[in-house]
Image 1 (cartoon, rainbow, N blue to C red):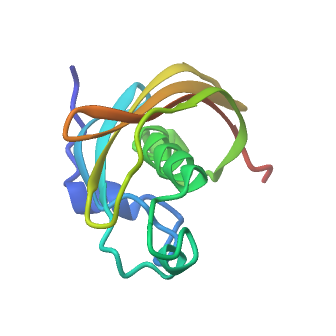
Image 2 (tube, rainbow, N blue to C red; image 1 turned 45 degrees about the vertical axis):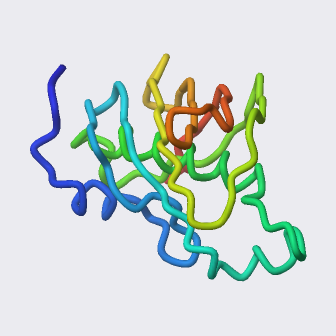
Length: 146
């Protein structure tokens, strides 16, 4: 495996997302254009916990998918030729939610890119908490024109 020479903070900084809509806190490993393992820890202070659901807060599934997509974007943007590009969600397939994620838990986000071209690509993504799968999906992304 060829690892990127960038630090975790530099890899996270490649994302165009900023708080409060950045769901990658750290990158544990990244093989540019191939794979990434990243982390996102919920604090319990996120505003959406108050409404999802009152008295029984859980991380919304769509945010788990967004976190996986952002992690995948790190692997894509770690390639020098993609640094100034904007990868956008193009679709999702085979989504399964397996376990509820609670406030204060840390998600490990793993994305393995299946295909990458100048137009976009596909990746297989899995989120886990303490080794237990919470979500998995096949993600499609396309680069924004321009």
